[in-house]
Length: 185
Image 1 (cartoon, one colour):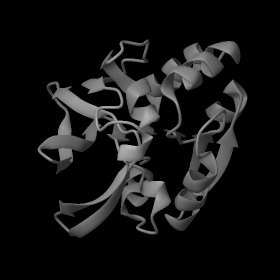
Image 2 (image 1 turned 180 degrees about the vertical axis):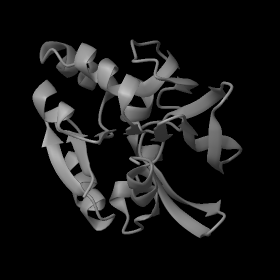
Image 3 (image 1 turned 180 degrees about the horizontal axis):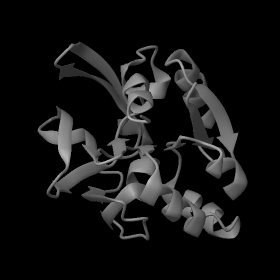
């Protein structure tokens, strides 16, 4: 059984843990580099990206996380997508740069502007929960767009990594997490 770590420093890591279990993999909460290394893949959950960056730095996890991403799949949702992006704007902030995308923070507005939308996928509609979500403004070579909302990419993959700007862990639909588990080899 594949083992998926969920970064458990901040954000809704518990919902991701349950979603990974529904997708048929073992889920573990990750707070240390040793816990991370025991995983086949890692989820960076939603939350507040600048706070997550500071916590990763404080816990000495930035370098281990970057090394992990050079070898194994990472899936970022919302704030996790920001952390994986090469370029971050509105305002700019540090990121891991593991995916050739540019992300604009909070592009859909404030918390009050959060929404639920229907995305059309090849295998049917998908409910997407956007909470202070970023927008992917640019995708580089090799980035595959799997879903769009209002014309903007909201689910992309590049190599071993994947991001969504919405929160699939807040719905009962397992397809996004199943896709990530399938990427673990």
